[in-house]
Image (cartoon, rainbow, N blue to C red):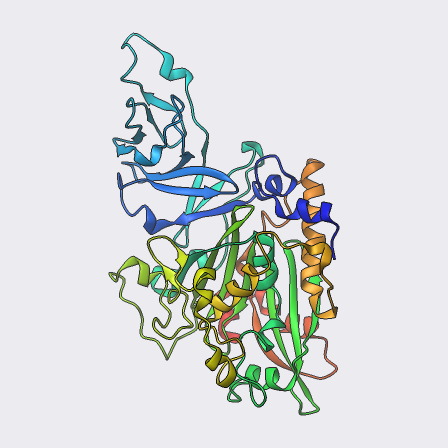
Length: 445
């Protein structure tokens, strides 16, 4: 459990808070590129780390992320006209460029130089992987742009969606890095076989309801493993993940060829934008799903999972608001008959199941009342590393993991002989990283 004081420190993200100061030292996912699809397209409201902002793509194709409020009378720039390399307030015509500088002030005399003295807050942006990222920290501390394998993948080899979750970012993160809950929350109906026996992970989950969780801290966060006895007396199933501070997870998608993960980005203290990504690395092929045409609708191109199954990213998302269709207001459409006969929860959709339990904890979970066990090691370590990172920033240091080369972070699942140490085994599998290309390494895995 945490003290109330430390819980506050880890969960509050507004300007000037310790966690807010830490998060502003990373490139923050702000919105999806297709939300500002073309030059001079309508502006978009963005709330990020407790700040109200407006995003727009200017005439030159640059994405601006500026304060939502005009410097004149505090009118929202969401109503503004995006035209001729700036966004113009409809109240008195003041116009701002992507740097926040006022570049036109038609309500003042032509002889006035007042516009040269006016500026609104603005943040630099970077586009990669179909995401517009923003840097919200001190300019002199700006790290290199985000560098993940999926951010460099072409659109036809990646999927991306996002959804609002109505609770604090930390309980969303902690739910995502908890490898043990899958034995229950996402399982079939007990008693009997909860998971499909046709693959190794299913057999491992059926035999071992309690995984052994081991965490190895790194310069970017940690790598961790859920270790499950296969029940054959000879092997363990090991699923290896990476947590890249502060909000990134990298994992393999089942036994298939895809890598996937989440980014749990604070909207404010009580809401989180969960980005879900899925990508097919070069050197791997997908025999199950045909490639998605490059000219398909952006929403489905960037969220190209099996729509209609109840388990895809998009089944429970309203694409106009990014809010859940199955939500607390309709009890996530829980079906008690299904819960008795088919699934552990009676709630349709893996991500919906996650949101249901995490939102049930309240806007900010009271961690002073919790009782953690040995399988919560990844959660405990994340809290410790985040606390240490806040102290590092307060002391004037660099944000841990902000400059990591994530191109070599490869997740995976393996069957490992009992007695072998998983981290050493994985290191042996990845020794090719030093001498071979990324494509060769991935193909070898």
